[in-house]
Amino acid sequence: MKITVIGTGYVGLSLATLLAQHNQVVALDIVKAKVDAINAKKSPIVDPYISDYLANKPLDLLATLDAEKALTGADFVIIATPTNYDEKTNSFDTKSVQTAIKESIQYAPEAQIVIKSTIPVGFVDQMTSQYPNARIFFSPEFLREGKALYDNLYPSRIVVGSFDQAGRQFAAMLQQAAVKQDIPTLFTSSEEAEAIKLFSNTYLAMRVAYFNELDTYAVSKGLSSPRIIQGVGLDPRIGDFYNNPSFGYGGYCLPKDSKQLLASYEGVPQELMSAIVSSNDTRKNYIVSQIKARAVKTVGIYRLAMKAGSDNFRQSSIIDVLDRLAAAGQQLIIYEPNLQAASFHGQPVVKDLKHFKAQADLIVANRLSSELSDVLDKVYSRDRSHEE
Image 1: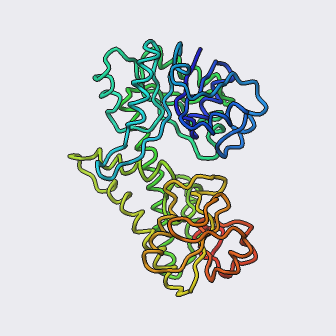
Image 2: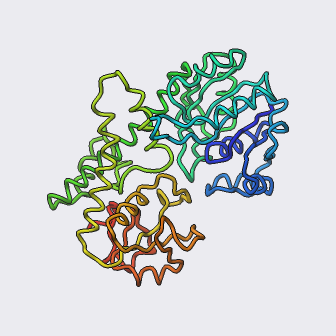
Image 3: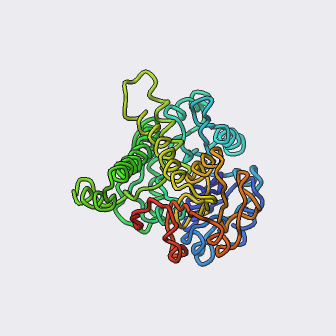
């Protein structure tokens, strides 16, 4: 098979690496630095498994900026371009996906187009109506940043929005490339697959919001949040996982997917979906109020990434906290070693961790690190490993 993957973020690059074990894969991107890195067998994103496979596995993988070269002769085209949520339209911005579909039809009219980008429910049906001769289906991804290839090698499930032979062939390619055997595999309509993606991520957002609101309650009542969470999690129906309090759910997927699902509910009775979306702002405002109550001169923001082991700042909850504090007039400094600039969102970046610790009267950390073990007395975090 010749497989073209459009987009080399976490989704695209992990799939390109995975499928290049058994197929000829061409990765298409618009960023030269990323293309050059992939061709030099180096990962342009932080993902240990991708780095290892690129450097040490025999992969048939080429990256290019040339759409015609990438797409000509492709049997499958996998679209993995970003779809940010547009607050003005209450919908995903699918322009990059639509452009990729047009290019695929132009250069590979016989190819099966598989959309991996997160899209609104009904998007594939719209594209099929617009391009009646194109073969398009949606297959959601369920990957974690920093562990994207691992999650493709050991997938929890494979969902393919197609009942056709091409859908079964695509599922077989994913199964063949995985290490895990007997992977639960579900075939649905594309519209059902689109809904599965949004409902899955909105449930995860709900779980984060639930334990964050539990934490808010515990702090307000002078109770031990970790002990309450431990007791709740001992119920096997709930489980002791995905329950560590934070400054809010963030990252590239949960905020936008929950908002998109809520927008899809127009005309459908609901209460919970609205609460899941609004609870995130409530939590961030509460965190800001707790920090402001310390009444310190300089607040240090420790790291901007959404979670440990990631270099991605997109939609990170601590950035919203930072912006709210800045709007309230709080003096701030930032420590983020992945930032090259001298400032971020108008706030100074301190490059040296020792100087950062010395200058900050209070250090705000969404997630704790051993780097802060010597200054825990002035750290504010809701990380479960640090009970104040």
